[in-house]
Length: 485
Image (cartoon, rainbow, N blue to C red):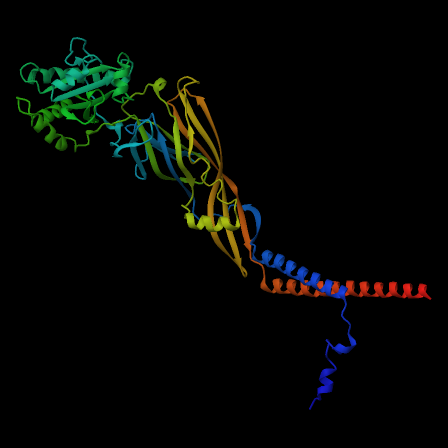
């Protein structure tokens, strides 16, 4: 059995009897200073232990989200009608998708970007519209020429007023003219304006009546509008609710459509029946509510391949012409981001430890790009976007867990004149490199080791200083005693 004396022999901390120790004022002062130093250094080490450290590396993109990139956007165009607004996508591999509608929503807006109604539903592809084979005969003039001076009086006089807003230089207006005039002549014979008075076909030359066409938000030629008497909902110029006609443009189709509008209305001109029949007649694909304003908010998303490409928003139609000198592609970007949607909570949590993360995730949000016509007409607004994927990961033992994946981008914008139809273009280029930010949690054992080092180090240094100070004071005292002898 091991005796207690043998156990005591391995004591590293042997005690000196208190009677053999001497307390000093200098030693007390050093002890207080040492204790304060230990507390200060312990607090610094604790703060360092609780602070998340990160390391940044740039590697070849190792994306796990597939070969496609999602683009979310919400962009308002004060001067582009939803009637013709088109979202197109193209890339260097030959992909060319025109007028994407499946994942896109459109809302008519006013000049203050406020919505003026429910969602605007696009019509079917316009390039399949059938045109007549009639020859343009100058002698056939069945429609009435409308101007700003007589437009309101005609629209209030006839229960149905169908108007062809055209431009003489427009190819499609020229193709429509013979069919329109012939249809107008046939309807005038069947429904005499003087005796019957239920329908009238008119035409407006937008090169002569620019203000009248702007008042009706005409942005392409020809635009056929059908006005109904008595359906006023606005005080502005006595405008009526009206719809656009997108059907076939041959004489037979025009006459058939117009007769369908007139049929429910008695010769006496029942306004009530005209209003009730409006709901039934606007259900067809050929007639849709016309835009109440000239602006459009386009929101939604598209998926593109991860190669250089373009997102283009412009006016597009296969059966209309546009006056490029009058088009304005000014826009306000409410939102534009790439990749998966990030939860605000997740982003906020990550920003607590990495404040700069997410700063360029939606760089263009809230920015306006306005063409004030200083450059003249045919102005295209282009945005050059360079996108880099950023991933935040945390190490848990020998494994890495992804906390956040986002795409940040730089943006450079310019306004330039174009020989083509003005557009808003977003040129997209993805970097082949990826930024990885790694959070490295500190080891608790390392923290304990540093705490012990602080306590031992301060204690040792204080002991050395106390010994030096004590011996110095003793030496001084001896010298002073020697002098007194």
